Length: 82
Image 1 (cartoon, one colour):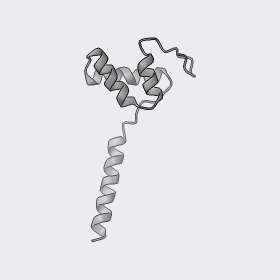
Image 2: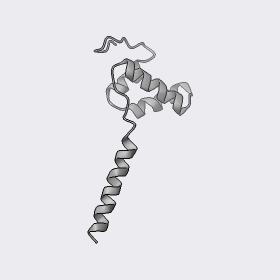
Image 3: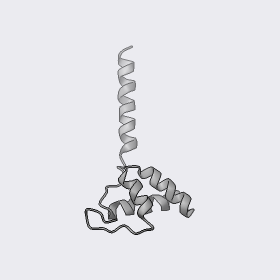
């Protein structure tokens, strides 16, 4: 499989590349872990690296912060309405 950026996905990478293309990075990490028996960090590093080579941007690291800010805003709105 050849990517738009010219990177050629190997046969070993193909199943994970297809999952990455569907936008399911966490699923790709899970399946890589199950297939190889590596730990979470190693699997995430591998999938993030593959995504970068494919020209896909790995998941944002700000997800938790965004969730926390929304939660604080919701709680503040609830308190203000009392």
